[in-house]
Length: 414
Image (tube, rainbow, N blue to C red):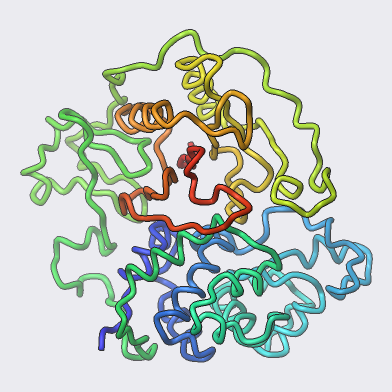
């Protein structure tokens, strides 16, 4: 039997540790035991949904303002202001006055009186577990998960299909051992500062992570925002000169100086695309058919650095490549402004030329000064920062969720 570890979960959700998983590990284990999420398939499906709903533990409150839920009697929103007050909270977003009341009664906390208590640990985990086992209109989601019916667990959580979250399922099945066992919470003790297996794992009492080498001359933090000249801290001197990235940010010993990043060896072609983006005229539900495009219409609003980079890529292939983001792209992450889909110039759903798609991808991966990639999906594979390439399976006939015909990239936030 193989005990589930934090490292297993981090392989599935690469950003979970940065978002506090170490501090929440006991709550997660208790959730698994209290709500019978204790087999490989159940863990895979639960973590898949939590990862997407929370942006890998980043969000504990719905990004939208909640006015779409106003006067929704099915959610128990019967008073003015209930929509925004009882918008989604927790790692599987509890939505509506009625659901806040139900989970509060189950957990012994009055979330109806103070819905923001659902954003405070351990409630995001405990409420997610309760919903998974008891709260969904689909019933106990463990049953679907155990049968390998992961798509029904998606429907049981969000009420509609979401092909974009499926990569978490396949990644979890690859990562989790077949004989996985969830340890009891009291079997795992959080090591206090100074009691890790090796002193090299700590800096000022905090777990640390080495910087990464970029090219031949530079070290760079994983957010690709801070740089240190390699000659100031050569690789062989890492352990003795103590240049680390820790929880509090970049730690540079007093004799070393942080420097500005060099210009990349290559630059994107000029001129870049300079035309104004189309007006984002379509509201959510503009088609009225409940399709994916109906619920996620196009937008052309990116962070400035991402916008500039996209324009330069379009300038490389004038008349051959088009780019768009859309409302809630990809769904549940709240990262519309740093996500982009590349299609043929004919627009969304027009197949991107395979040679051009690979050229764009290779160009970005080899450009040190690009807005760095958080994850990308292309031709049935997904690349995630810190994990690398993995197969990305898709059988959804209603969307190009496998990204065989378009290139998806989500950048890290500037």
